Length: 398
Image (cartoon, rainbow, N blue to C red; front, side, top):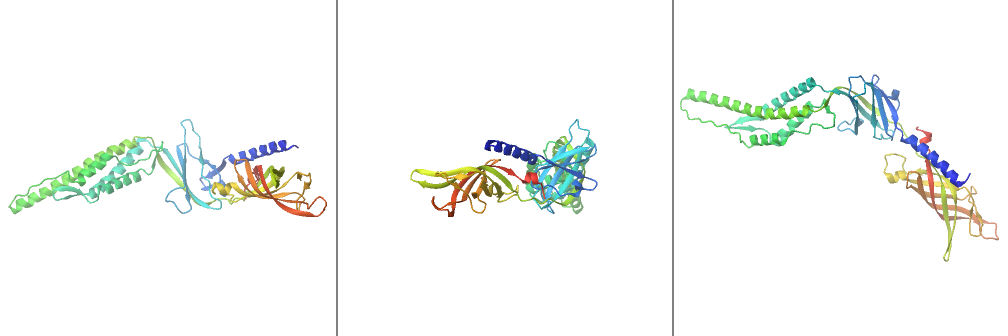
């Protein structure tokens, strides 16, 4: 077989193996048993699809991935949403996040349905009630003015927190979460904190009973004034909350937590290289003497992890042998020590998806001179280019 045909065959094999790697692996989720793939480990360092059953009332499924035991913020979130024409009972969520080999992860799968007006109104009433209680404890009447016992930035932040917590069982269909109340609320709070809403009272009564009656009236008016300010602020808050709830939302149905699920251990990568390389023999004046031939070899990268930095994934130690004779300018055949073929040891860098460039040294063996049969081993600079097949694609996983 010619060298050209060999390279074409090699390229076809590589494209096939690369195509196998590019495919998504489907992971079946069993909700009843709350596990993946009948309890088998999850694939490492590759994208996959989670597939499972749902009821026809479920319109959205969300998956969250966490480090085992650490749920402050998810490592990855994605969702499946039901299309208008989909009446089935299956969901499929692509997971474009590569899990680390031999690690454990926590998963959360949450089901949602389309929120109707009744559901939205229940959420609105609950949030408004919580904000009313909060504001009543925040506003106090001191002297002749209405004041807050917290600064306005704190109050606004805590109002947003109350609302987001009340909406935690709802998700926007278009990934537009509630992002806080408007500057109108901030301005209203500023008016109150600057005592711009004054409550004026005059106490110019000498009679004790009349004074006590007037004091009571004053306290009542203060309370009414405070309540009025709270009601005005609540009205604006209610309007903005209602405006958000008019958006298309999903309502929470239930969730499943999968704790400390294991990920498989991957094999070290091993690649076969078939290419063409040359060696530098010597420099005689202006003439440079070289020899070249096709070679075959193997390479082991500095890191086999798909999550490692690109430099370590692409850089490898390579070794191999020339598969045809190497001849010098005198047509003398050069063999190699031990295996009777010149062999090389090099560092290789994968410059393209299929191509590796190698540079290092070649060990050759040849006669000391034309008259002598004694052999000597020489070390010559080597450079080559090769196509590469990653054997991990065909050997599978551990």
